[in-house]
Length: 270
Image 1: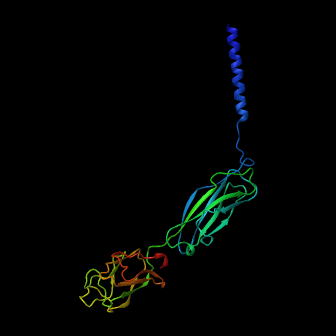
Image 2: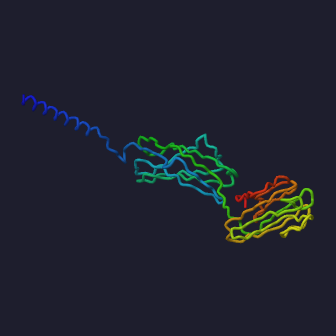
Image 3: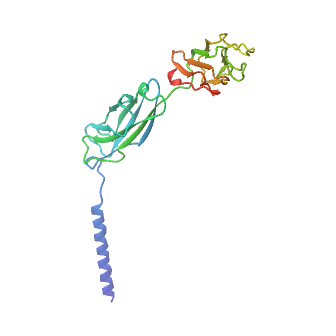
């Protein structure tokens, strides 16, 4: 009986040894030189705010193997992209010899981007040259492009053109008058402008023209913000436009369009 048990134990030990030996033989060893290459974008989405002077982003592409020669990275624009070709420039780069990563550079064109909202550039990774048995991981990247504008006002002379369709000056909060358009700077300075009304004394230095007139304010260097506020339009007759130092109109309100509250300034145009 003991001999039978010992023989059984011996057979079991030999069997386990064979199984372990077999598992060790089937174990896959990663080869960073000649093994299969997995290529991938390092991220799946990027937000790219583009100021007036333009901006770019370097998109990293990784490969799981190295090569003794430089490898070219190839990408294509997905048909689902909403960005148009004039809104971006793609510069394909490569993975240097002996390295595992390279970049693709995407530059945004401020002038061609929509004045409001965003647009999407979708890139598909299609090839990394001189790579063994190439396969892909994260092969799609979405870049969201939008205009990025400095909210600090441009220093210099700003012009406010004012009108009144009835020709009797501005009546903002009452039938006889009211306050004017105010500009509050980050240093506490407050400007107030408007057309004088003949019906009551104005409490600010208004422009003495009944139908139309212009005035200016000077914003100094170092101002971080300027808040424009319109008090209202009692009779629906007031109009005005605001012109930045570069000559661009950054806000415009027609007769009857003036709603009491902050005036939205297009700082991208200043």
